[in-house]
Length: 509
Image (cartoon, rainbow, N blue to C red; front, side, top):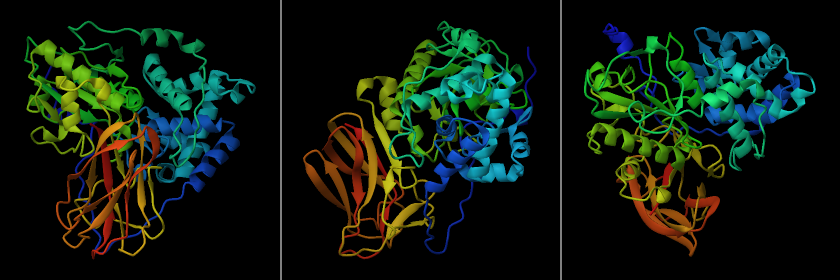
């Protein structure tokens, strides 16, 4: 029998943001973001180091959705907008800083320094794999460089990383992203990684895996070998967020210093599933040895505070996986047995967080609604490219019951001045509209919410002085299939107090 791991090792966690006390400001604070300098940073780094600009943007988009997380480490110990590794045995943070004559702290905290460091690292790795000058001008030729750049312990894990970047190249970032990548068909040159590509097509039997999955096994130092369900029953599923990228989480599980693992990781963009620990073995994911012994842990790519990672494809793939696990081990498909990481006794992490739609997810798990109808999208005022407002709207972190890192506020005036939330509505139909605003008694008692329905503009007035700190339903409305502004908050009201624009959620009815 394998020895029981030390307490600290059993409680090492990847998924979810740790609970952090937010500093409330005594008065609303203002902030504005300008994507122009970010675009220039990609252009300059690409030119300086001879790396295709679109490749750099796709790498950053696939890893972080162009978010830098204020220099804080991801769950897999990477930093900044391009997710530069600071892991033991793969310290790209220091190496990239040296290549660009910057400090590691600059690479952690400055977008321009972070992008430049990654471009320099990619150029150095292009030299290592022997990429010719002619090949460097072709994006498709950089696939083996990305495999090398992943720092993965296994070739197939490097291929997962490279596939994620090339997937972003093909799909693009969408019109609302702070840096535009239009998307175009790209045929990656996988000749040097054919073995990895073939290995990734394998799947497991239901005795070891509940759904077809790529296999990329965690390092044995990061889990406990066992013989479940004979040695201990499997009667729980724990839902996590990676607080980082899909490929980064898989690679981190293969690093023996991680002291953390989960049974599965699911990709945001298309719901791809990778299994990293066999069901019979005990992954270290829950922060509780008792829960680790009895559960299957599933990581979902993304960050708890950025709803753009919570895609329908990921929900559907995860729900199918959980449904199959429950059927295999006779686990009731209930919220008592399918739990959030934050609900594990003694948990200090918040994942999957307030953006996770449990009602939608459980309907998919139980099969109460057809998966084709499963679609939900949440847009926060901080969601990149999805929230637009004039300079009259300011940002605040005053109320702790806000959704996301901050919220927008403005004084009421006899002028519309609408702050708009844009959604990619997948198909024409009826959609439920929910809104979130902080719980502050002094906010406006008659805030106008505009819904751009397929039958014309509708207005719903909301008393924002009560009922805050949670989702509030405005109603169900017919919407056309489009990617455009759908819900707006207007300043034109006779009510007193600030009007608030925090977050909006659409759910297909």
